[in-house]
Length: 319
Length: 306
Image 1 (tube, rainbow over the protein chains, first blue to last red):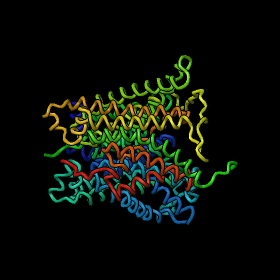
Image 2 (image 1 turned 180 degrees about the vertical axis):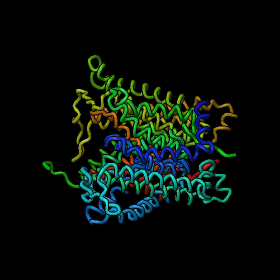
Image 3 (image 1 turned 90 degrees about the vertical axis):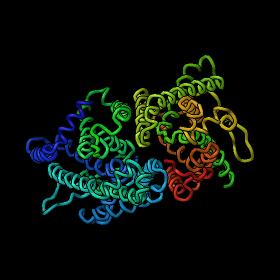
């Protein structure tokens, strides 16, 4: 563990802090020229999880709230885009603002009453709400019932119709960069520091004049918006969405990525997400590990919480 | 319909079904409420303890059915399930929760999710994701007719067992020394330590009791519904928590009341609405209660301590 900390400290040094992400970005940009479609798809999936994890990170990592239904946030974005495009013939890019709007509205509906209460109520309410979203999507005709929405049109960007996986690879790469930028700016802003204060000691934050309920609601809204946008892009990349892709396992996976990666630490969260996306691909054919991986993650979660409660790659505390 | 039941009789029949469902919710909700009351942990693994209870009951009955048929066998199986689950709950408490009692509550909650994942996936692996079926050899439909509605013997036994257990628990918490210690720890753990109460032991006992109650519900559900599956604990886990919140979390009579109320509302609601919306109804109710009366029906308003 000491060695691990040392390695992370090295990665956190001044030169590495900009050098490593830049090198990584360069490598990611070059990769599509060398990899086949399958490998690109796996990497796309990793970036997709990274986006979700970055979104959830604002809620869990920055603010210390527990959201057990993050899949519902991206389901809402995906269905908003899907319905507007399928039933109303909207252009994809125009559905994005709507997706953001719907995410904000639902976040307020769920967050405003519960965030005033004990914070662990949020966990169960988000869980219940995720079930409501999933069941509603399964029962309504407009959401395509159990089979979901299919054949959602692929959008074009600057005249290029985005049909190949390599196109989406680059779209998601840009999204990851944007999300990282947003997360980073958030963390170092006045707002971000208020969230960190709430996470570390809510009572003290309140005593120092931080309007905790309002800030928690904002954090929750930002997380929901990031999830919704990711969902919208997910809908047009996959071209089909169904209630099955938004169950509790999905929410648990995203939460695990954030927590095991290191709550609040951006590279840690991305590494966690990549691990969760790539791990099943590697162990798909190993019979026992393939089936038992959630068991393994559960054990890992308990051990990490007891021995390294800040996650594998925690945020460095500044004195 | 072949039977010409009046609308009221249908509703009454649903009321009986609702009471049964409500007893399951109430038994599971008690464990939630006790644990939440004492260490402020939303024990996410509680639904899985219920599921484990159902599985142990089914397996033990499978072994016993040749020797002890009928109700004797069922009773022994349920007791075995309660013992097994109580130990499982205690182990989770001892090795996963106790080291984190002083840590932020988020870590504790996440650990509980970890415990839930471990139990869930272990059972899933053992049963190969297949449902198992329970056949007691008893006549499930036998019962007494009151007017137009039928109450089966299984339902009667189930209701009386649940009632006895709830009365017993209320007496235990209300009038024994250990019960008093539990209530005291819920109020102020540190002062209890100073007063010479063995806090860890009492917390362990709370987990033993709560898990045994969940396993009782699981065993009864296994007998009543006749099938058991690895994911049966997930929904009832959230619903029982909903019930605990409706009644006022931390309050023992509240958990019972909330459970029964939720069961009744759900059964009657299913009659009036489409059954595919059943869960939406329950979780919508949870959100509504939290908005309108966050401390529940019987909960005392409480200021969160620092």
